[in-house]
Image 1 (cartoon, rainbow, N blue to C red):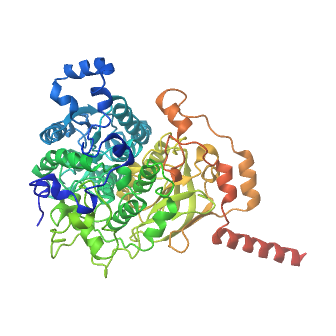
Image 2: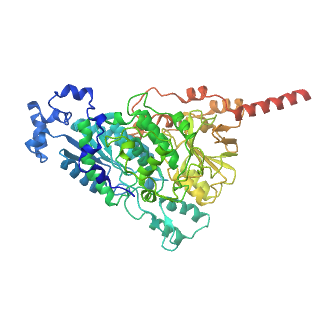
Image 3: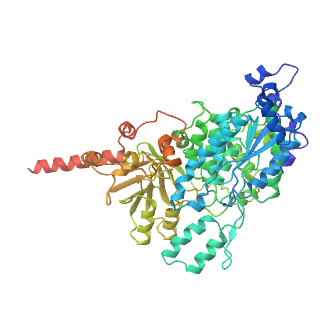
Length: 639
């Protein structure tokens, strides 16, 4: 049975502090505090509140309602990614009020501020999706800016939609001041009135494909769209939002149950209030994000993603989050995902490929139950620290584990897939890497012929015209970080393909990315992207393509000769950039490849030609060359 987070925090915050950490202090804190002074909780805000020379700063703070006694208290920034036009985020301002109350009850000053947001579900299938991924970095930048300029001592962030979360964590990694993330929470399941069937956002996306292929009527389509999302909260399955929330709880950067508490639950309100005491504890311990976000902690997050069948976006975001810690020993790569995927079974029967949603996980023990299951099966390092000030093992001492008889998490002996569902792909079509989401239900190999579209809208038009047939390898290109720009998600195409009944007879490749709601034979993040002359730009309709997603192969190969490759490279001319001014143009100039997490604050990335030249030939290409050589020898012998 689930225990309340408030109970975890009561009666005192000291209950969270392991004895081994009661003297944990950073060097900077030790320099600022004398032995009898105790920990300095306001070591950043005191730069404004203490010196007489900062009288103007203090005057402005008095104007906000502070009194003289408040000037010695730590100041905590409470950042909500609130805006009204999205169910994932529309309730976050209200939740931030509870957080501020908890902060002030614990003895600190809470100052709320806001940042931007983009709804993937609303912008999906339109050019608005170009703004989605860049919003992650704008969120990180804006939080870093406010925290840095205002000199807040700690940060409690309340994100909702998927990119919000890595943006908040990236800011915490850059700042390295005590930080806690509170997930806005999952949405409840919807219900179709006429059938009683459970619905979610992907039901609405797939209804279009069902409609255009005459599987449902217009009235049924409307009914589905009007009842898929019943209230506040992020998309309910193990899509990107819940993937990132569970991964971040596994990482140690949110309080227990944060990722499974529904958005409209009393437990979520309790968590918000409790975060104030937890922050006070972090300030007293001087326990900061980089103390928690170790390489081992990121490996824990990856294991959670693999076990639960999480979104391919986790690869992109976890890489970026790890790089924000500014430590090469902490940074994770594509190879880390593959290494962990090879030894971690896929066990969770969750949407989009399964039948349960995150609300159901809460009812069997919540995310702490999932973590305990992983620890008990030697798949998770329970000694990693968390924002409670304790390790996962210590947090879980009184947790009973997953509810007996539950059906969501399969036993180790009967997995959905013996290894992880995410496969890191290479080959001559993606020498810099690609990410496949292979649950096992769609098979592990696919050979077909290319059907190319130079943007998502053209592909959707092709689907409407019923151009796409069984055996096609559908390629959607010029949708990468620079070409899209912004690596837009492809939930509309994949959902339409599934709705049209083509999900098990076509494959889909893109230099863009897929939503956490995507399923089927989908491979995204293909690097180098088309815009910079990557091999995916050189594919022509009818070209043979072989995809081998088995763990021992993991290749995507275009089966043409070296001479043909070389001629196509010479003929390639990059199309004009789709943005020539404003925020997207700035993004194009700074964004790294998908393999590098699409970070925007680094320089010195490899070019497309360098990535292609460094890639070895795969068995499929070598096999083709051998066959060509044999045929040439036979022709020669006949002369």
